[in-house]
Length: 194
Image (cartoon, rainbow, N blue to C red):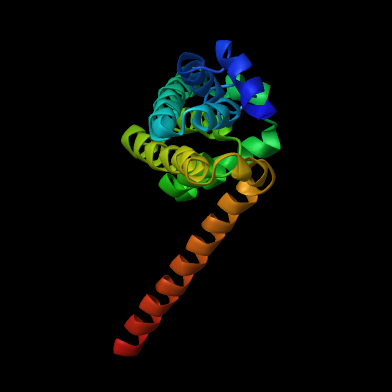
């Protein structure tokens, strides 16, 4: 019960308004992930867990769009302040080659999403594709976290803190493997018909 008392004490800081603000800022440059506020809020009020996940997702999308336009207008010098040239080169290759899927993966996994938001603007990724990928990936990430806490309560917090990033990478790897098998079978079927 001490954990809940401690969380109630923090409600001056951990509240939906601050969750929204942190979500916006994190998608641009802020190092504190919104999960650190989302988890306690859902734990305190599980009935509103999906509302909190929605607030987090909305804030993250707004921040992502701001980051996109900062990248578009500020260009390369801005992002080079926060991301090494080597990392920027890797991000550029991913965004140019995979666009939608690169943003989806960055939004769902522990890959620094903020680097992709600004880079998407620098590289001129299609805005509608960027926003759709951001909505789906951020919504899935925050929704899954909220759902786990709503279903399992305080018991799942340790799991999320230790293994959630690994879980998200596993989901992406599994989906990638499914896609690769589907693609191979599709190509194999076409080759047999010819």
